[in-house]
Length: 459
Figure 1 (tube, rainbow, N blue to C red):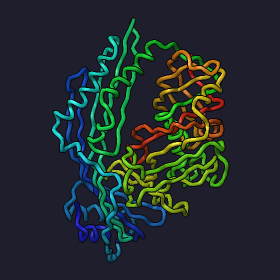
Figure 2: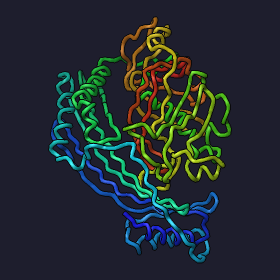
Figure 3: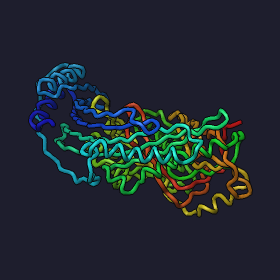
Figure 4: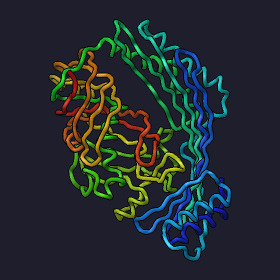
């Protein structure tokens, strides 16, 4: 991508404005996707993104610039702009880089871009066809199949010069069920940090049928009553509540400047003793896993909360300087035009000791959230609002009729304390997380949990 000798010259130039550290981040990413509407190809794309971002530090002050011109002159021009923005130009220092090779713990067997588009289209077609055939009430089906081949180069004035390559594959199917003028939707979108061998373990038809099953459940559902009640939240994408309401509050981006409800609480009991939460970028083949973060730091298994005690934060380089704490391999960015910030990888609540059947049986009245959707959160206060995309009322320890239109409303600190039962069926689900450094792939997850009390929005 960029030779070691050129990277040395670029970094030396970036340092000439008085910086005490500089880094170069290079990217070559090939994205390909196929989308379908009602069984017909709607769009097929295949694009290449390449460029370099250069950042310089002076204490906790940073200057960042990027360029798509990766010629030597283009890179030097970008570096000179960074140096000039940092301060008065001085003599360039000498930078010596040492190449570092890291083991690839997330190998891909079949690179999506290397497979004929017709093969990929048939995989997607199988998912869309199964969704359409699920029930006569299914009125529309859309789907997409995505492949990403992402290669990065990280070099910095600590002598690091290293590359990494990561491949991801994902299929998504959405279905709409219609009857008597009412339309309800469902979706499924599994993915992984692997190539098309992903479909050796995921059947596209099962993905389509799951999307239509959700749509049909919601079509026959009545509106959820509103009020404060006990809630059980199922595994997989149910973990989005921890990700949003608590996970972002544990990122150094907000913690280091005191803009987080969790700032200054290391070692304190912030959750029920049954709650252990982990961010782990090393899980083999997981959607959010990477060998190194976008600052060149190896990812790790980072225990955030252990038995309710706050143990650690997710820390990037700038956060490390601000907080005086070591980096945790959490510096991530969408691409070369973004400055890296602390972000999650695969974040989940670990398995607990409660039996899943006991969780439901313990509920006299409440709501069972089988599938969660999107929402919003304020990291400073932890206040959140999340949609329930598939929910059921619970009465006398039994899951009863489906309901729709439910939402969960509360704060991260409250929900952590109110999680009083944690099951044993941990699963993760895939999403794209947006923040100041762009959109990055993340896994969310948990086993079935019970929240003793939470506000449920409805009718």
